[in-house]
Image 1 (cartoon, one colour):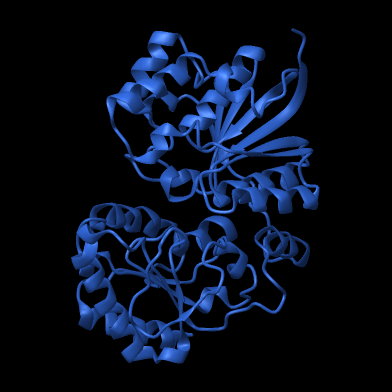
Image 2 (cartoon, rainbow, N blue to C red; image 1 turned 60 degrees about the vertical axis):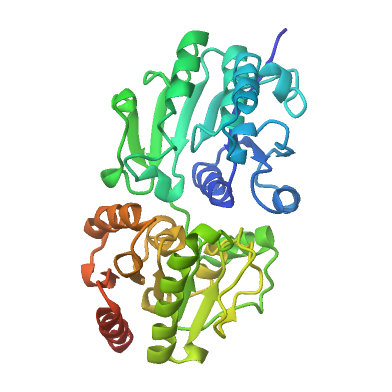
Length: 375
C-alpha cells in the first residue's frame, strides 16, 4: 500500500505530555497529529477540548483499555502472554484508531509505554525512515532508574527477538527542558540531545490555551501562599506513611494558618486527609494551568512528600518558587527517589536556598517561617 507521509505525530499518555506537545508544535510551527491514550481521567474530554483549539491537524482519543494490559499492575502469565502477542502483532491493535493510509516523518513520544510502542512499531514499518523524538516526561526523564527511557528486561528481550530497532541512535533525538541533568541510558548515549522549546505559558494567549484545555474558568484563581501536594491515598499498606504526612500538614497549618494554605489532592486519590483544608476544586486538573495564573509564582511555597508538581515550575516555566520536600521526615517508601530528585534538581536552581529538605519537624517550622519572611 502507498502511504500518505505526514510531517509528524505525538503519542501521549498524560496531560503533562500533551502540554509538552503543544509547546513543541507552537514553538516550532509544526504541523502534527496527536494520539491521546486513555490512561488518565477524562482523556476523551481533554481530547475534545484540544480539538476545538485547532493546534493539531487531527486529535485522536484512543480507548486503550483493551491494549494497555501492562498498565493494570498485573503480572500474571496470561497478561504477559497477551502483551507479548500484542508486541508480535501490533497492527491488529492499532487499526482501530490509526488510518490505513497514514505514515509520518517524525514520531514524538516521552516514554516506552506499551500502547505507544505498538503505534510506533506499525508506523516505523510503514516508513522505515521515520525519525523518533523523545521529549520531556517530567521527573521520569531525570531519574536514573526511570521507565521513561529504559525498557524492562522482558521488553528488551522481546524487541531483540522480533528484530525491533525503534531506538536506533541514528534516527532518535532527545529534547528535554533541562538536558544538563538528564540520565541518558547507555544505548541512547549517541543520540542528539538538546534543550526542549519552553513556551511562555504565562503569556495571555498561552494561558487561555491551558484554561480551555482543562475547563478552568477565568475567575478560578488561588492566592494562598502555601500549596500542599498530596499523594495517592487509599492503600492500607501506606497508612503509617500518611499518618506522618498528615502530622507534617498539621505542623504547617500551625505555622501558617489555615486560610493561607491550599491543598491539591492527587488526581487518582479517592481520599483526603481529615484536616480542614481549602482544596482545589478540580482534582483532575493539571497544576500547570493554575501556575500560569500565578504572577507571584516564585514567591509561593510548594510543599510535598513526593510530587512532580513541585518541580514543574522549574521545568515548564523556568521559575523558582520555594519548595519544601518532606521525604526526610516521612521516610520510606518514597524517600530514596525523592532524595535523588532533590539532589538532581538542586544544582539547577540559581537560588539554592529556595529548594529545601528539612530533617525533622523543628527544621520544617524554621524553613517554612524563613521562606515566608523572605517574600
